[in-house]
Structure formats: C-alpha cells, structure tokens
Amino acid sequence: MTRTAIRRDFLTFGAPSIGSAEMDEVAATLESGWLGTGPRVARFEQDFATYKGVAQAVAMNSCTAALHVSLASAGVGPGDEVITTPLTFCATVNAILHVGATPVLADVDPRSMNLAADRIEAAVTSHTKAILPVHFAGRPCAMDEISALAHDRNLVVIEDCAHAIESEYHGRKTGTLGDFGCFSFYATKNMTTGEGGMLLASTPEASEHARRLSLHGMSRDAWKRFSADGYRHYEVVEAGFKYNMTDLQAALGIHQLTRLEGFWLRRKEIWNQYQEAFADLPLVLPAEPEPETRHAFHLYTILVDERRSGLTRDEVLVELTGRNIGVGVHYLALPEHAFYQRKLGWDPDRWPNATRIGRQTVSLPLTPRMTDADVAYVIAAVRKVFGAGPVPGASSIPGAP
Ligand SMILES: *Cc1c(COP(=O)(O)O)cnc(C)c1O
Image 1 (tube, rainbow, N blue to C red):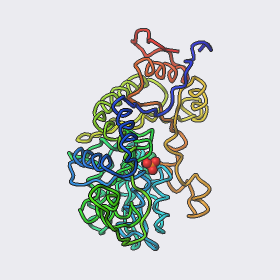
Image 2 (image 1 turned 180 degrees about the vertical axis):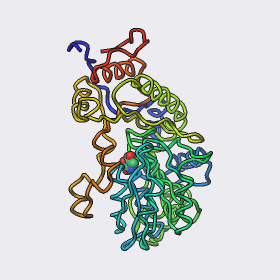
Image 3 (image 1 turned 135 degrees about the horizontal axis):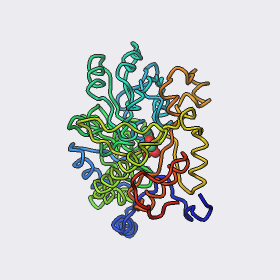
C-alpha cells in the first residue's frame, strides 16, 4: 500500500448518523425553554414502548443507570449473587457492584459469544438472585433456556440490550423476554441520544418503581411540578438516583427511532458484505444469525489467531488504525482487568472462551453513516493486512487503498 492511497480522513469507529430532523428538534427544544425531563421524554418513552410492543418504557440517562435501577428495583443487594458474562462492557459488572451484590461469571459459548445456559446452571448457588445476560454484538442469547432456568430457580432476569435494540428471539423482542430490559443510546450504539438509556420492566409496578428510582425517589410525575398544571408538591419515598433523561436527549431519540429500521437494513448489508469479502482470509468470522432470530448487527468482529494469520491482534489494530480506520475491541474479558482480579479474585483462565475471544477480537467499523466507498476501503485494507489481494471475482473497488 502506498502512502498516498491511505484515506485522508479518519473513519471514526461507531460515528452516528444524525439528520436534519434531529437537529431541528434539538433547536426547537432549546427554544421551548424546557430542557429537562418533559414532554419530549414522555413522547420518546411512548414511541419506544410502541416499538417494543409494551405498555411502558422508562427513559434514563444511560444503560448503566438502567442496569443499576433494574437491580435495585428487583431487590438485589448485599449477599446476593448475579450471574453474567465476562465478555461485556465493565458497566454490566459495575452495576452489580453498585447494589452491593457479587458478580459471578459464566463462560460464553465460543460460537455465539453469548452466555451458555449450561455454564449459567453450573454457576448457580443458593445465593444466586439474578441472571444478567448480554445479547452480544446484537445476537440474542438462548433465552428459552435462560428463562426456563430462571423459572426453575426463581431468579430475576435482566437483559443487557445495549447491543440489541432491534434484536428478536423466536418472534419476541429483546428487552421483553426477561423481567427487565436495559438499552443504551450512547454515541456508538445502533441509535443515539448522545448519552441515554431506556428501561423496560415486565410489570407496571416495576416500571413505576424504576421511574421513581431514576428521579431521586420522588413520588410520581415529580417532573411536572414546574408545569402549567399548577404547582405540585412531591414526596420523597426512598433515596433514588439522578438518572432521568432530558428533553434535549429525547429530541434526538424521537427521530433516531423513526430511522432505526433503515439504519438496521444498512448495517445488515455491510455485515453481509464483510462476511463475503473475508471468507477466504485466515480469520474466524462471526457465526451467521440463528434461525428464528433477528440480529441487530451492532458489531462486526473478526478473530485473529496469530498461529493462523501470522499477525497478533494488536498488530492488526495498529495496521488498521495506521490506514485511518477506527477499530474497537469488544471486549478484553473483564477478568483481565487488575481491579477485578484484586476485588473479586478473578483469574482469566477460569473463563477460557471469553478470554481467548477477548485477546483475538477486532471490531471493524459498522455504521449506517458509512458510504459504499468507506466499506470498500475497509474491505481492501483488511484484505491487504492479511496479505490477500482484492476480493476474488470483484471488479476494481472505488476508493480502495
Ligand atoms: C454500552 C454498553 C453499556 C453501557 O451503556 P451506557 O449507555 O454507556 O451506560 C452496558 N453494557 C454493554 C454491553 C454496552 O455495550
């Protein structure tokens, strides 16, 4: 690759697609004088609930907040164990620590990269209170098995749907399969409010409790205390958190949600293009989606085995970044972090599948903002890094390095 062939601008990993409708709504919100939790949050919650086919959704300022509130609302606390995956973002496990409970890891299935039901079962003890599955990369977990296990052992199920807004499993939507579903609208997620999250609960009581916990533990609709309906006194019922979403964030979310299906189709197209273009490379590619499921195509991850490819994972990260391609690592297994080793005595060798994946994985750019030329550039660069020529049978690719 000659130097001049490297694209001039950096292809930012996970850069969102923000349209004029989002921008106009943000401007209208600023002009409205109501920036905090208000009518736009209420509308976004209703729109999201409708999208998921449920009665209520509770907007939060992050998925981390939604996870914390779900655990608190479920009554998980000191002395309780929560089973989750080592192959996740630290927020999943930190939320468990924030309620004073103990995270217990079960290894992932190497093919799906999701929690394996038999490993969960092996991790259950008399202290287990909840299971916290993560639908990794947007691929739904084996929820039939997880729900059956939870039912048998009387465990709460909290779905971490940060990657899985559009996912479905056996005809049902992720986030509605367990007792709680937690979504992220962080900047790199499949739709964004800059920062933001959403909580779904399986009962109206749990929804109301979650809503209260997200706003200082104040009694219902406390945000309306400044509205034209007249001043309302509120009562503090418990010590809640400051996790409410603002109308500025919801202004983005309302329009991102209407564009989500279009985003998903484009993600699917790019994901499939990568699958085809890398089929002959010395790499492990993601498994195809399972039948009767909908994959959200949040991440496209390749596994780099140095013995097969002659390159280390970190060399691949350096090579691609050097070609102005933003890449990600999802994730170094959580037991690799010294903090968790010290605090919880975790040793990466105990979860060999997650540990190996975490040491081999590279996430390639995958967003609806990418042009065909961007995708072609990434494909050509990845092929070049692994010593392969253009895609066999492909004609000259525009924008290729
Ligand atoms: C992004 C992410 C979170 C945290 O989401 P925030 O909205 O940033 O708090 C939690 N879990 C997983 C798996 C994530 O990818």
